[in-house]
Length: 235
Figure 1 (cartoon, rainbow, N blue to C red):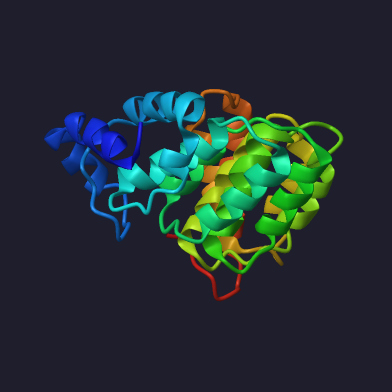
Figure 2: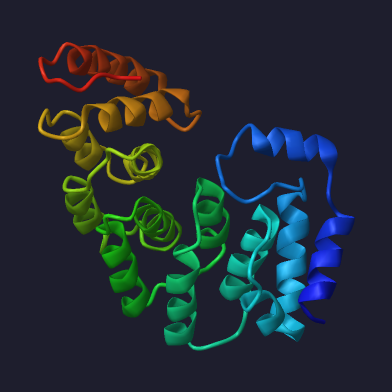
């Protein structure tokens, strides 16, 4: 198995209808061919077992090749130090949410090293590094030992980039199910980004895991946030 084999395997799975659908969701500089995510992940698992360097060393020419590279890093057997070093380089070439969410939702580790790395990424000025940090934390560290610290860090993030704001709202909506009071305190804090707070409420009100009573309460909170006299406005 080499990079040519992997490119041919991806090309064989290209789907025109899925290409058009994906192009409406992503704003990447990489061409989109329409390979479905389960097919990319299956190929990444195969590469991780037999020839991980073929995918990891590949210079991506398409979005699907980028995702294959990242997913192979996630699946391949290696030390965590090696994996983090490869992830660090991988993030440098990510330019859209898919390269963050699909890859970092597939790597499972609850080590102190990985947590410290995700915290560092979360606080990065690079929007995609910050989002990768959010996804990794969401996947691995939403427990009682970490949630309080994560909420405190989320109060200090720059949410001016759309994908950071959306990732933050998603993360907060998941944390709400574990620490309602902590999230409510954050979304009621007028010093915190207004769009973030409103988007978090929107996600919670769309969730089937949130009670009707909570949704009514959140609707009232959203109305108060919209009336705040700061310069930020909701989308």
